[in-house]
Amino acid sequence: MKKVLIAVDDTKASKAVLATFCNSVQSPEEIVLLHVERLEGRSLMIDMLGETEMTTLKDAVRGTERKEALDEKGGRILAYYTRELKEIGASRIKTIIREGVPAEEILSVADSEGVELIILGYSGRKGLDRMIAGSVGSEVGKRAKVPVLVAKRASICEEPYTWRDAFAAVSVTSAVIFGLFLLGIVLK
Image 1: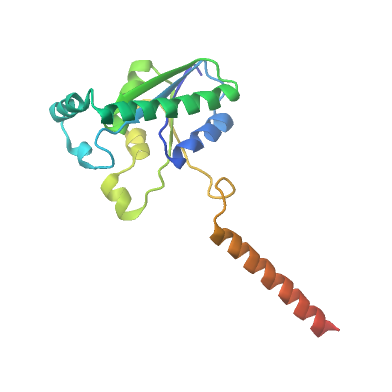
Image 2: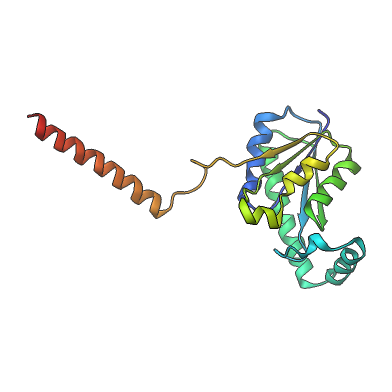
């Protein structure tokens, strides 16, 4: 494989792309690492904007503190993934920051760079949230001209424990020990 596009952001779902890349892809000649900035924050309004409105929004944000903060954040995200990919042996990594609708930008970069595979993280949205906000992975998968690998993060052992997890573990262990103690008394 010559070129792979890996789309990343600052979500936990995005971190799954590293494991998926390591486990599923033979070393490509080049990795295109892409981060798409969402100019409007978490608003769903961007999906309704036409090309003219998007251009106006990009022009309005250009040169502002908000844009500088987005660029700095994007740089940190790409630096993190570049370090991680280099640690696992990747050598040629090209980083790109785009702004706009994530699915559209991912598809645009995939076409312009001539990649053979796209890897991105699975958000895990369900129900009404997924219906309203949609899924970047689904949209890219439907419209891409190349295979798309959607990485889903593992649900166990990769996240730190909370106090609830510790309490549940102690409660279960205590119940088992107490049950064995009672069983030992009954069997005597």
